[in-house]
Length: 573
Ligand SMILES: [Zn+2]
Image 1 (tube, rainbow, N blue to C red):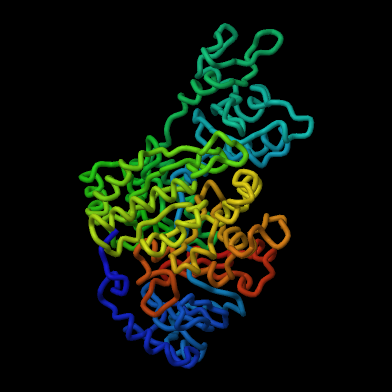
Image 2: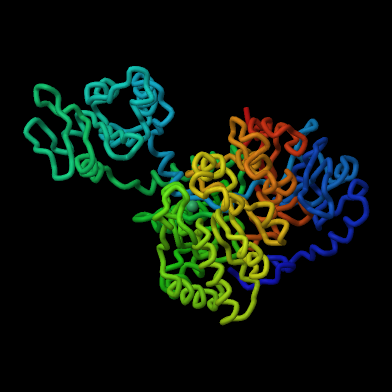
């Protein structure tokens, strides 16, 4: 967002290039200090992958005041050790910069944390057990919202009844949404609050399921479920806080130390949610770093206000790009394509925004110095957004804008090179491939398959490519993304050799796309993304060296320790 020279330190106080030159000599023999000489923390005896092209691997790192003060051999780094220094023996384990997830919806993740996830249940008994574990955590009288059950997956499955749920609790109101989102079961207290009894007629467009005697079973369909859902209060600030902290702790467990987040645009409560993040930040209680995206369509004055309020330089919470969506998704055939879907010859998907309108808005927001990130999945959507960014350069001149296309899933060959030439970052989610592989080939047809998920082509063209997950759409764990990036195979394996394996990356490129590149994509590469003297000490320790593992073992690789700003924020027990 800021117009800032890429080589200039974001804080302007440290001259990094001096240290770069030092590292041109063999890194193992030298450690470079940055002012401080007493380390708070030293990691040693590891395989430490710095992602810094000038340094590559070291065996030890020293940290003071949340920043890296030295890197190199154990002996070299030992000079910074005092009696006060905490030392972590990596014992041969692998360490690297903390993962930076370039695309998340933390607010949605927080809401899921507050809800009871029933999607993995394999029986009615398990559903009841899961709920019974949740009940003691909730105050009597509260609603408990669970979602994701699907009786068709249960042996001898039947839809739960109010009596099943009353056996779990009669003093909390239970609303359990089925996996498809079209119906829900409620316990008796919830039915009572929804004023549903024997005499209640079915609402228009809805069904109140009843047994042979006419008594409501608790199963509400469509509008009947929607009406009851409307009774569940929106989360309180305290609940938001709780949900965010749980989601962020989950990120830490997965080695993720920074996220770039679309919460503000969430319908309804985005502003409340972000104000809770601001509150946590004011208390210095944010466990990870968050860049908050702003709503692209908002009037410029409002965007300026947000940019001022959140600022663009705080290392924990700051304003980032302006986000919007120009098309839908491949799976629902709503991504805007140049030619019809192979599986639906009358359908080219659709644009959610008119190209001329988008172009005008991009030009105005670019002129105001904002970074812009637009969700574009289909090849037509990608072309329209590239055209708009091109127009911005023609109108406003070239600057270090770092505009992004989020997803960039299907890109026509004629457009690929434009990412580099226009300076547009491809912000992709490799783990989507693990899900999309089920339908993408039939959707695209043989001719267009090569246009899909073109990770290697982006890198080879010289464009910037960064990774994220779309969490909670996909799990936040980066191992799935790394695995997808290097294999292009299902988690269970296949297709043999990978789907269009020429587009897979090597592990080092995949790690860079998950660390240095996301930092670049949020104007943070001078203080994050590599382990470099002077940068923030955000580090993840993995149980195994992922650069030397068979791909199937990458998926199983665990995070042992996550360090944020020089402090151990997570340690696996
Ligand atoms: Zn998203």
